[in-house]
Length: 356
View 1 (cartoon, rainbow, N blue to C red):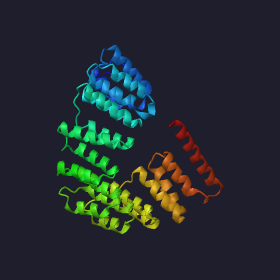
View 2 (cartoon, rainbow, N blue to C red):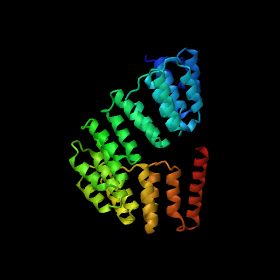
View 3 (spheres, helix red, strand yellow):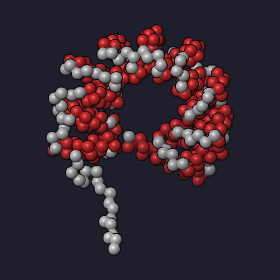
View 4 (cartoon, helix red, strand yellow):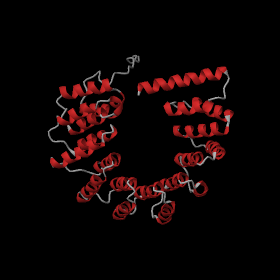
């Protein structure tokens, strides 16, 4: 006779005595959503003598540095307890500084890293280049570029693309081109970063010249050109490339829709959105703000209602940005019942802002 199996229960992540592997998994998959759970995991690491493990400490730092937790000081304290931090741990601290909007601190931590004789890797410099951009620290950017070359990382795609973006943000396109030339010529991410740099500088012709000769064009290259043309008011050129694309992804469609809205071609934006749906491409959340704005501008309330219904039908999370777009679309076009719905949306927005 078969015996009845015991009832299945979902155990709390820390209800049993976890080992290093399970703690690492917990830190990587669960703790970024719960500060109390993170603190429990931290306490167990201390109890089991694992708080100086470089990987586990790095995961703790990364999670404590989550801006939603406002616990960056705890991240620094965890770091300070490790006697010989490896690059993984330094990178977590540098990236955490950037995420918490203290980019100068990220640069300072790199100086400490060098003073202690640690060796950076390809994941160290992208965050530092972004920190230099955020801090408007061009001179430090030059020095970090030289440091990346010194450590043999001048051809790494992560490093080169981030460096190009930094130089382009400062308007230093000659330096950005030199970085591209010194890098790995077969990495499309680097070429795409350079295309984006030209577009943001208002040089679409130079971007097109680069696009035409690049040896490793990918879908991201097409998307960068489409977005860049639209940003520069060249919507016909943007549409021309969109129609020639060998294949499109949801980013391609979103770029075209955003471009139409940016250039005040609202009817075309709505038509492109409908075509996107007909071709079976599922839109990302950020597309809805654009099409709702288009609906509001042309007074297409029924279209806006349909988009709102689509959002609800597909369980798209309405955050503060999307909620504002819905309110703006409905504003001044509603009967009493609909106004009550919008009032509820506005209340949800206020709750979302207070939570953040």
